[in-house]
Image (cartoon, rainbow, N blue to C red; front, top):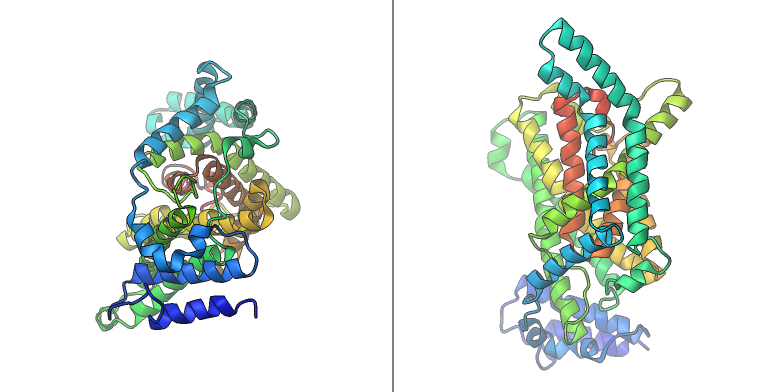
Length: 431
């Protein structure tokens, strides 16, 4: 009986009998989703959840509330985010320490992934072959040292900035996930998965495509692009609806739910990836070492099927369509699902950003193992988990959706670059 008012509320919303809910014969998709989310929020409030008065009355005033824009401070907030992120890195080092860290990490990247490419670029004679070979061997030997020193410096800077200290997230300000009930965050995941998974089925029904006689690789490219395109559209739509709903529930719009996008997220995400690279690469090396010790053999050079296709057919434009979809579309869809929606629900349940980040990263890595033909070998799960952790930490710290998306894009693009320019030994963990 406790849900009777909420059920009555939903029925009134559906048939338009409740004042303020008349559809006037037309239903806008975004408006319908917002009203559905309002119903979920109302039902959640009747079950004893903490819901503000503004959210409880959303059924009659959501449209008016959503008309008020909360985007006027996006650029100012993004600029403040950049300044705050850089200040966190350099405040305790006078600006010089962060520059040193960047230089060391870049040296580790080039020392670990670029030697073969350098050798190919300058190897023009027997004398040069000998000297470049010695340089390559030396850089490979020092790769672990570079990465280890880089990771220690990054940890020291983040600890000095307060991020890794106990209560660091609370002091910096937690992302507001309480303005929406958990069922709404899960509903967003379901909508994105549903839209993406429906793409191949819909494509198969298009008569014109069937008449073209495409081969397996071409159809794989079409289905892959369609999968991520549908997922991106659904994800951005849900992001927009949730942002408007969260702003309406907040009343004055003063809290930050971490649902905003900005072009300034791109440089911030790039910087965060550079800082996270030592951790990711060390986890990659650990996975390869464990596999080698347990299997008495080195793992396959290419860990992801997309990289295998690129290695086998580098000049095939249909393969490049798959690669571009993996570099751009996959980070967009996966970060919205695992970092924004799933991590938001976990924070609401567990009341701990760190636990939410760890569990969402474990699920993120596990799903890459359950991908069927596109699944990655088990030794690649360690760096994928590291990517999830890094993106989750950066997202909760910056509260900007574009930051983990950019970090994920950089990781995928780096793997593609290594597959093209370097010995296949450097590409172990494509996502």
